[in-house]
Image (cartoon, rainbow, N blue to C red):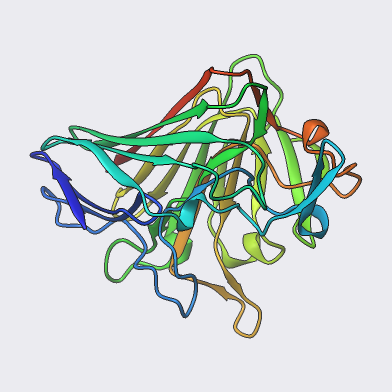
Length: 292
């Protein structure tokens, strides 16, 4: 496990998936990340690539070929190399080198960089197209934050604050059998009380949101996630049908991509939210998590 730290935060990251596993706040003593307990969900903050969410039938078509791929793609399970590390930054790199041709026909290089700045962790992505033609892909974040953060708090002590993107209508989507259905405009969204019932039908999904804050109304502690220009965001916790409760975490997931719609053609080039990257070009994106 690699560690970067400053006067505020100590962050532990593993090479498998270049996944953040722990964020410890040195000034308030809190641990902010979910533990990865398999009893609920065994991951902590995977990077989703080259798809976000599930494909209809777990398959897609490209250039008259059909490929099969499971939910969220394969990058979260590969071993990254460490490209560069300082006390407060670390860069991970993975080069496909033909290893995924059976499920994804394109060659790419993925760089995931983590940068500490005071009480914030900045996450930067680079996807390099190493083909002689354009490529199509989605990429997304899936960080899970421990809730409650403080002893003697409960889930209902927390609320979500939304900052919509300027001059954009917020659209709300729902998942049915892991596929996307548009629900309509949600421009009046601002603050939402956290309750287990929010996740009884899977994740909450929106477009045109710039920031979400998850905060305790009792202690004031929480997480601010900035993701300007990201077209979609998901909010999820694992709902337990037998008890009507959720797991002790909430994910805030900025996405450049989204699950298939029910009426998808299955053609990757026509997929909702897919990104097109020309030969030799580099896709860049970043988001920031502030731990309060």
